[in-house]
Length: 225
Image (cartoon, rainbow, N blue to C red):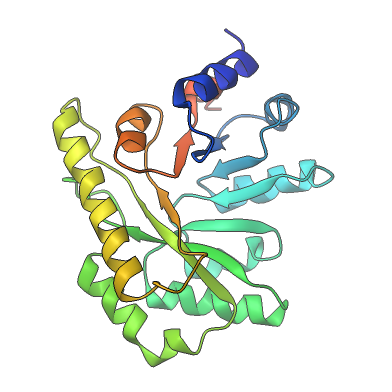
């Protein structure tokens, strides 16, 4: 199948209009993004700032909503702040402060997700619940006017053990529910649970995901040069 057929097949398989697809276009050229865009896809995700900036420049005439889904270094926020639609990977107060500072300079409000560490691997970034509480209870966070916390994000273990993956997604859903109750009960914006990728999105949707981040199931294998 071609990439448009892949996307339409994914949409049919999800069968839930409330689940958003972020088409992860990392390593794929702007021409392929255009093809998927023409099939009414608007959310595109990139892992690396430099690649995202390059594609934004090539495609800035299109009304793409760019999602930064990879680890974000504080010193690179400035490159994406003017056009990013959502940052999925907020994993420290330091990063949140820099996003808020630069957004304030540009009179912007930036949508952010708090990234949580749920995998049984050492390579993943993210907060644990106590660290998130520390951020949300801090006076510094309470004074921020230019970030909008829209929910949480997490990555499950890269594993064939689907029961392990399911349990990790359930843990993230429990974190979301707890934060909603304790910190965001009056926030309509806090509604997103970003979990699930090409290998495990079905389980993620079953466990309550509202955003799945899918690359190879749409674009095919990554292109490395």
